[in-house]
Length: 362
Image 1: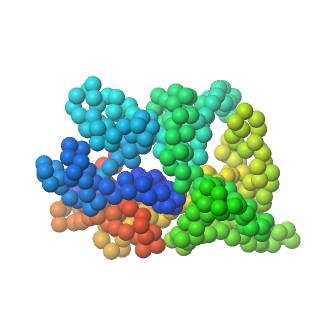
Image 2 (image 1 turned 30 degrees about the vertical axis):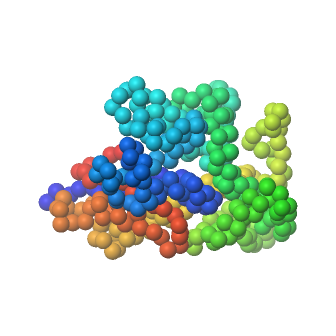
Image 3 (image 1 turned 90 degrees about the horizontal axis):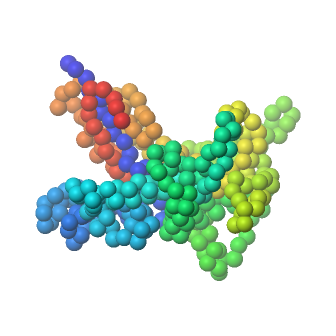
């Protein structure tokens, strides 16, 4: 009997996890809101329902269209209706707005700045940096002005995520130095920072360090504990004052206290001590690690409980192989499994999409 691949991926998993870690409810709500663009009154918060007026299956709100509405000050249903339209005069502009918004969500969430012209460390040729360069690498034509504007809107609207970066700027320094974090809880900044710190504590995301002896030398390892119980390790960790990878408001160099550790230099690809990081990058490490743990939960269920042998996984996708027989579980069962809540991640909304075919493709 011929075999088939069953491929299912976690929908927008990094954006979902980022909103969950930051405790940013408006963005979490996007993933649990199902709409009919022609009949807003049919909006529901339950997956799998149909419009009470036209009977079409309700669609989950699109996080990129949602952000585009915030960028361009538009109504979601109007923009989504244009995006779904067969009229190119309506669909074209709506599609362009979503294309601009997508790298804004995916890049700015990890503290990318707007960007300017820099130098490629390998070729020594000019290159775009920040969100400006990130969008270009995604094939999106974004001006430098629009990149800076997008970052500003993101940071204004998704403020809880911004303060997660700030919390993760401070926590590693406090752990490594043994000094407590000091701030005025009565100020707006202090209130938001306190919320970010409390949110990490609620999710059981915490940090510590331990010391090992290596041929008579002390080596410090900084460790992040994830909600799943897994840990991230930063070896040869220390704290130092370094030049930040961004400029001040007047183009001046910014110096800051940073966690440094042993790792791969992203420019030389060589292992070295003194790799620097910041709150946005640590936020990225945490979000991507949790997203990986979410995928593993499903892979284990496929393999050991559903008779779906796992033959691969790519980023956020699980790939199984079964006989091409309707009596065998397939992509529908995989999608249902990947949508199920996870015990160690209460409140994290999950979604999945997939396909079945005789060869793997994107």
